[in-house]
Length: 462
Image (cartoon, rainbow, N blue to C red; front, side, top):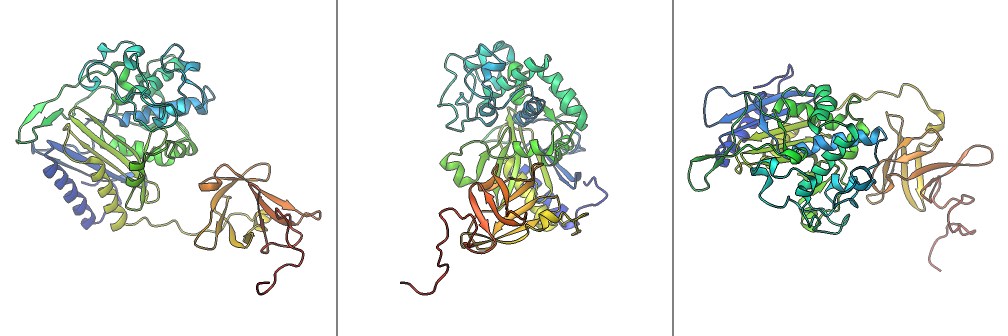
C-alpha cells in the first residue's frame, strides 16, 4: 500500500514488503505493520498478519511502550522554552519531598540520574498502577543504583518523576496536558492513553511451539508517562516528522534538535555498537547513518520509530507480541532500503537573496598556525569554517546580533567566533575560542599567541 501522490518505485515497494514479511514470519508475530515517511508524507505502508483478511497498516492501534517517553520529553522541553523550569534544576525545586530530589531534570531526561531501572515490587508492566499510588511506591526505599550524572542507566521511574513535574507546573493530569499541547496540535487523533477500535490484541508467542497466550493490558497509573500510550503508524510518522523538523505550535526546530543530540555518557559496549541517548530520544549510528527516535515494548507489543534527517526518511514498525521481531533492526533496514534505492534529491542550488558584504569579506582561506582552513557562507545566513586537510576541526556557525558567530557542532559547539579588525576597519584575523586564524600562515603583525619570529619563514634546518 502507498498513500502518497509520489509513490515509491515498484522495486522499492517490493523490497519493503519482503523485509516486513520476513520479520513477521521469522519473528513469529501475530501481526507486524510498518510505514515509511518522506518529504513530510507517508509514502508506503504495509501489514503482515497471521489472521488474514483486511488489516489497516495505517489506522490500527498498537501499544507503543517507551516511545511514550519521547512525548513526555516534549512536554518538559516546552516548559523549559516557556521559562517555567531549567533543565539544570534539581527535581526538588519543582517536586519537593521525593527521595530523588538531588537529580536534575536533564539527568532524568537522559537517564543519567542513577535511578533504578524499574520500580520495587511486582513488575509494573504486568500489574495495575493502583499498586503504586504514590511516588514513594515508584521509587522505593533505595531509588539509586549509580552516582548521579556519571552513568547512563535507563530508568522508567525517572519518567514518572518527569510526568509528575509536568502535572505540577501545568496543574492538570499528564494525559490531559499531552493531548492539549502535543496530540491535538500535531493532528495525532489516533494516539492516546487507552485503545480505540480498531486495535491489536496483546499476545505472547510460545518459544518452542506455534501457540499464543493473551497478555494482560494494564493501566499503568503513575508510570503512564513512561509507557502508557497507544498509537498507529500514521500518527507516529507525523510525530517522527515533527521530531525531525519541529513545529512552532509545539516545539521549535532548535529544541527538537537538542532532544536528538547525545546527552548521556555511553558505556564502552554502547560506543562499539553506536548507541547513545539524547533528551528523551535514542540516537543510533547504523550503517553510516544517524537514526533518532525511540523503541518501545510492553507485554504483548513491540514498537520502533526512527528518522534519518540526512535522508529525510522516517520509519515506524509495530508488532503485537512480547518478543519476536527485532523491530529496531527492521526499522533500520526499511529506512536503508528507501535511502539507498531512492536517495534524497537535493534542493536546487540558489544564490543568496542579498549580499552581506561584511560576511563576504570573511570568506576564503584562513590559517590556524600553518594549517589551512576555508570559510564559506551558507544559504541560511551562517558560515562554515573547516580544515582543508584530512584532519582538523570544523563547525557551522550561526550569526549573532552583536556581530559574532556561535558554533553549532563538534569541538566548537557553543564557542564564539569573533572578527578582529585593524584600526582602519579592515579584517585582520578571526578569534575562535582563543585560536587565532590569519590570512597568511603565521602572518607577521597579526595577534598570533606567542608571537611570530621576526625573521619569518626560512629554508633548511640550522
